[in-house]
Image (cartoon, rainbow, N blue to C red; front, side, top):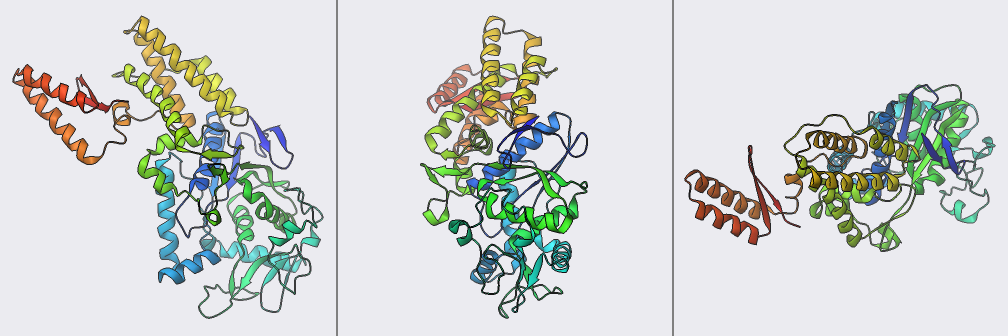
Length: 467
């Protein structure tokens, strides 16, 4: 397995800190609003990574956190007139449901900031005790970046870059403009605060991830975890600051490797609420099946920026349709074992820093070859069993192809039309029992005119929406 390390800026062999194990921490959402396509892209990228590592025989432990205390959340609480837990529990539930629709497996560990306050306070106190952090007069606690000679080596940002410094919160008592908040003291009675030895307040954004990693992972003297991941926008300042505070608190590096997925763009612009073009995942799922979105969002290499547009999405769906049309030719049937050469080709592609383009090309080739062989010999049982196993492998490794094909081709049919189709099929079934073939044929013709194709099987009549 080779992965692209964002710090070394090159592909490197994946050599875990513990043999045959892989520890991964991915920065999750701040839960004050619905998930957007950027959240989906990151989740899908690291879902592919964990699937690939598991397929290669690694024991994977994946953690993804929820930031459930933050200024944006407090603002949402004030606007909605609900408690913080009501707001955060609601959006966590929405997030998990939408990721499930995309086929993203739940993380093994899903820590929340509010459930990790003890670990956060302990790390901050350790940094204060070693003069790597300091408390200012209002109770805020800042990390002392001058104490970390390696600060800047994760993101390779220039220390005196004005643009970088403009992104860091300013306070007249800060010892250095680059210093950042580990703890924010309460500002008023309406503030949401937690008691700590340094002041009553709440954790800064960066400290929670470092503390959670130390709480949930048993690392080594050199590293806490194997891989730290997230969106490219987190490289600075978030991941840079995480690395610095962890280095000073533990005496070792936070992660051996750093991986980052590219941005999502809509019509060429970086997706951003400030630009007014944020595309919520919930809106996409109203129109497109989660598996179709998964296939589309994964069709571009995870490190590249993704330009979302409906024309490309429909093209991707047609490509996925071919897999399901092949699967339809194989049913009813049972899988045997996947073709060894095909399996190895997929694993080789995904082992090359998740080279999805090559993997999808191998799948297209498998589909074309299987269809040609089935055209020549439609009753080749061994071929059908092997091809079904190939599709099961695709579903396990890449997360698509696992649906029943007729159900897949019903996607996009509204409930009223479904009820009408099912009623016509039931009427046709009854006509066939009574040997009223004229009525049966007439109903088939009516369904065909509606764009509905049917197939009679031992399990009953299956139907799909024709392309």
